[in-house]
Image (cartoon, rainbow, N blue to C red; front, side, top):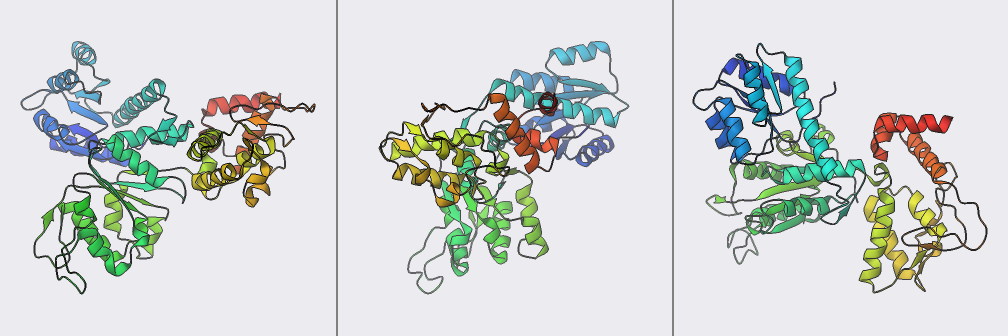
Length: 466
């Protein structure tokens, strides 16, 4: 069974140090991160300031028992996954634990495969429950109904509750700053400053002063003391965009600020305490940058523990349709225009272009089109030339027929000229084949891009062959 790498650690509560170490090593080998404590009291203290995804607790512990820990967590309203293990398991104990809200009950001697499977099942049930109960098509201004984006929204919301640094990965134009702002809004710091800075835009010789501030007279031109970005973001979040561009000597000082929660202004003699949550982002492959000695491995591992990847637009399936109409609404409202229709050829262009610049490129194209549009209609000629040149998919078959006529912003309306519109089944078949081709025939990846289960994909492929 393939294990899922959770974004938050598992907490192991076991007073036997050897067993606790064995459990942690086994779970780490399965791809999880772990924390371990020897008592229920220490677990409660840790949970008061640390977010975890699941608790695995022994029943017999010094002081409070594992059952009492379970009971206290559930009475406090915690929805954490909880697995109870014991060497003295009875049916009555199992029933009691499950009634109190345990997600699973296992007995010693430990079957390590059973432990891994139980952890996977509990985490998967929690994930599926969230998706069943919520359908977030907008997440603080980010549009996305595909499964990959729903997963991203869910994970971002969970991580926002912790105070750990976060690393956002993604190609240029995918919306990394938007996601950083969303994480800040979801966090307990949302009433404090969100301070964004692009590391590529600051001259290298001014970076240290920009980040940590300086005292009066620290260097030529420093006529007054000045706060840095860390001090400006006090209590809130500091967003370091394009962190891969940060000079390596400043990376060491950033790492120290993360670890010690203090900074020293340029020319200063003492450290100043700071309370800042770091959210970093990059389009670079930082592991390659480490190999080339452009990025510190210790800083990378400090940030990468809680990382989120924003998928490029080409991996987001039918999200592009929702984005097209949402962005038309956004920019027509901003410009005081009423866009009542979009020509089929223009819609075909927008839906079938590859967008190497991702959502930013799509938005710029629509902003231009809305600006140039006349008489409430968005037409083919209003789009950038590169979109007009790629009016069909690679196979040469348009997903939306490029015909004269009008398409309302919300739905397709055939023109008076008799045309043969493809059926929904035909459009779906073409789209599935397009994605299959783009993924090199990888059905697992195709299902992820389409936002459907692999079983559903196989069924639709079988239907298309009949």
